[in-house]
Length: 283
Length: 283
Image 1 (tube, chains in turn red, blue):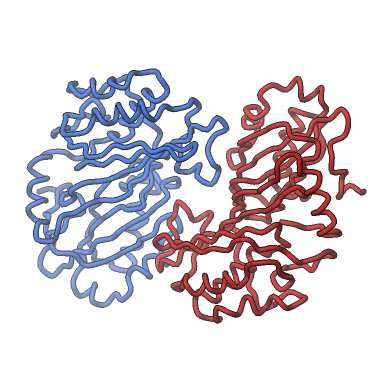
Image 2 (image 1 turned 60 degrees about the vertical axis):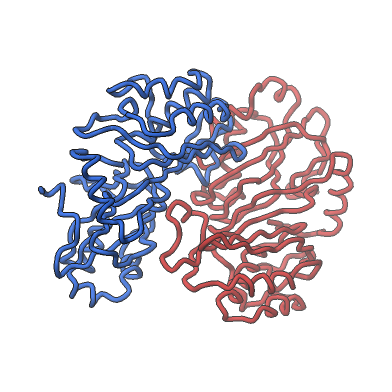
């Protein structure tokens, strides 16, 4: 185990604390700490350091890219039991310290076996697109992509359905990782409300840029550049498909992360680790 | 007729053009042009001046205050027939010139009797409030008020129902205008979706700060400082009630403006003008 792969369970004298987070990704260079950059992890860790100076590093369910938003991000952190006992209303204190573009909506002690990343059963994202000729509703311009051509959501739905199931999604992964790119795509739906197409996508996990590559492929189908069977035809490939465009980050929001009941947390973590051995990047 | 009260119908050699507008009020000092301020009217008029240099002044349905948003604002402008005939796709050209926080979603020629302000049958606004203890969803922080105490939407609903109908709303008008403050409040509903209360309010017209004063009164009921019968008890007053707080502007959005069928436009304008004679300010 190195620093990247901390031991999964909270150690003795520590409580494991789950944080539910919501953020506007516009002003952040993504989740993960980067030198000289404003990141969600950096801002939250800074606030935690003030309140709980001996807490450990944050582990997150979805390492969102620069510009990607979240309304249901989940992270965990280990805190010395004594420090935790003295803190009081930690959510109110965190929200007092944090800037308005990131909020902690829930803080609670979870079983030592809870792991925000490896115990997750699934992640769900939405991607918002407006194909109105005049652009995007200004109030939603920070989380909605403008597409200048009318999109055929029926063709996109047909293409989406053919992608469901367990496949090697290497064609849709930006960086080939050391581990597997096999994922179980559980839902991929497109709903039109007026000029806005809201795509919902759920999988056990996503490799890097996978959601935005899937959206990029569906956009090519939606505006008629590709046929509805094209995205699924790429599933056989073992490397990234260069002709799949990666949709811009700001239309994307991490909505929810699912976990098993407490009794199954440790088993789930073990299974995930063995399936995705060596995978460093799971968004 | 002075400059404030231009003749209602478009004159000979002019076409009357209706603009449907949507904007994020965050970066604007309201609708109306003010020297040295960035306003919606100013920005739109500047774009119109480039495309249609001989167009007249903009007349608007709802003169929104600084920070107030719109998704369904309506304005009209008179354009020389020849200039109009030569312009081509004016919506696309306007959207190309306008900044991303204001969009023109529709542009069309309307009957000469159409008047964005005086022909309107009703205006509908929404006001968004989050009473989550942790604050407001960051992606919606620009159009949602945070209320730090839990709100009782049932009590607010009771209070709202008692305000419906035709009353003198002087108690809820910030500035006493020369004309009447009698308005017909057609809808006032409160819907809770999770932590967010969305209030919808519709009237024939609103006097200055009326929507935000109604929301302020309902907030006092919602958090238990006032009883549900308090807001309606103010309807008898002939001047502003100093104990009604005006809710902040950024939770407020003008959603839609209703107009009669074309054949009734001239009659409606005439009626409105006689009812609200002397009223300079209708938001």
